[in-house]
Image (cartoon, rainbow, N blue to C red; front, side, top):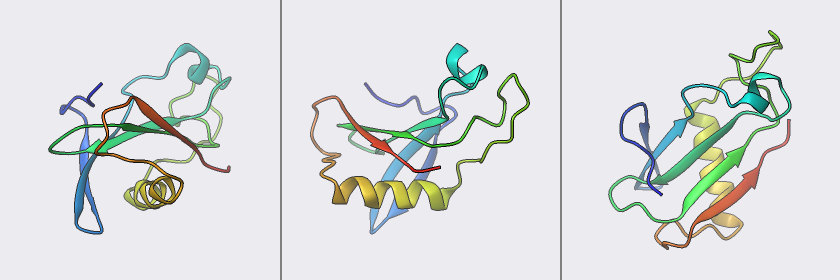
Length: 103
């Protein structure tokens, strides 16, 4: 499953270009802070295995007004490096690779 181009951003890590995105609107669970903020990453030109990153923070637009932490390019870069070290193979076409970040 590829990340839509609209609303996504590009980032280059170690010479490889990736596309990343945060869901436009919170899910019901994210809105009520039952689930944390997540974002997805994949290769920009030849999408393969999608990296799904679960942060330890609420979404900034949660419905309870709880403070959250934005996803920055540095967060995405660090997540990509951590996922690659943990075995993520972005050129493989076999579903998702999940990475959980500490709060």
